Amino acid sequence: MGFTMTEKIFAQHSQSGRARSGDIEVLTPDVVLLNDTSGSITVGQLNLMGVSNLFDSEKVVLIADHFSPPKDVTSADSINLLRNFGNKFGIKNFYESGRHGIEHALLPELGKVGPGGLIFGADSHTCTAGALNACGVGFGSTDLAGVIATGELWVKVPASIRIELIGKPGRFVTGKDIILFLIATIGVDGALNAALEFGGTGLTNLNIDERMAIANMAVEAGADTCVFEYDEQVAHYIKQSGWKARQPVTPDYDAAYLATYTIDLNLLEPMVAAPPSPANGLPIEQLKEITVNQVYIGNCSNGTITDLRQAAEVLSGQSIAPHVRLIVVPATSAIYRQAAREGLLEILSAAGAGISLPTCGACFGGHMGILAAGETAISTTNRNFRGRMGHSDSKVYLANAWVAAAAAVAGKIIDPASIADHAGRKEQL
Image 1 (tube, helix red, strand yellow):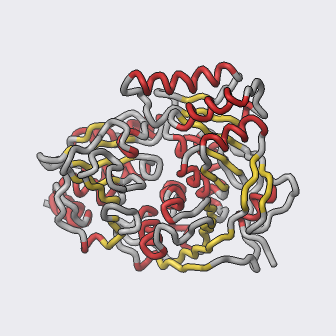
Image 2 (cartoon, rainbow, N blue to C red):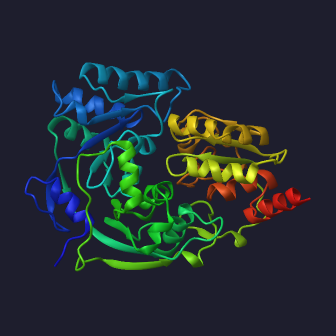
Image 3 (cartoon, helix red, strand yellow):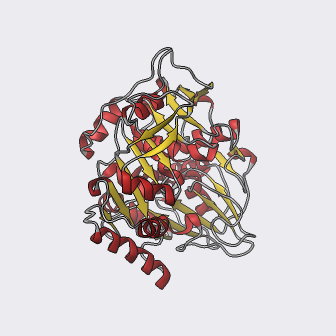
């Protein structure tokens, strides 16, 4: 019996040199990731352990993103703790406001993620690494303290679920819609304790940004990790980023899977996930006309240059509805600068958007866009649990950037085609 991509990546990082689903193996990751929320717990545990040396400071990456820029003394102290920890142990990979980004978008840019790689992070959305033929696994902060101290952690190798993508997405259908459709199909526990593996001819029609949007939300289906097949788009990306640590992996033809699902991208429509679960995805036609108070475009799943281009396409020459506030958050400083060079920030600002520095911000209910009681938002973020972005009596709908931007103009959930088609008729006149 052959091996899955997940088994191959785990085997390359295991002490035994092998990995089968169900086995417990001791793994050494290529990168260990801490942020300004999980970091304080990890640093505290390292202090309790009396650790005086790290296993490899070059493999540790510290990113201040959840509360960056800090909103109060508590968050400033948290970032300062991370900074001081890095200084104490000579960790050069420390990133904060001005030269940083949201961790899961920043790591690939820095060349810290690539084919065959294994990333451990104290954040559940570390699975975003899967877009680049890697495995990212989220762990608790105490587990990560052990890894930072010793360089290893025992892990149960997950079985895999194969997702075969075929066809080509239609207009206004994105990676966000693919993952919302998948989660609606299999449920929030459909991949529990498993890995999602994506492949098929349909991958050709998805750029790396779209794949990152899918990989980011694998955990919302219960998955431990995920991995996409390697292709020319991944090869081009890592040539730019500089990743050279590992080699690509491919699934064996006779690899064993828990289940296999085929998604025909030709048949998909823009999806919207109703609160309070990412699994409540429905075609947009079934959720039209819902009034929104806030539109949020950004975060580690959908703050890419692709998302900003989509939003700008809808908002060009438009103005947001009077009762709506639009917040746009590029995922990294590099994306922010690229959006500025392309004129996207000017288009978004002219339409009435408030544009933020890269930050996790309102996505997890931290700052920069908190919802009041009774308010409704449509967001490109990855979770819409009760109270996720603010008051427990607020509501969050999840959608792609085209749908979110159209809602900002209309003041309600609406098919983005109606905005774009209207703009096209105006240009012809």
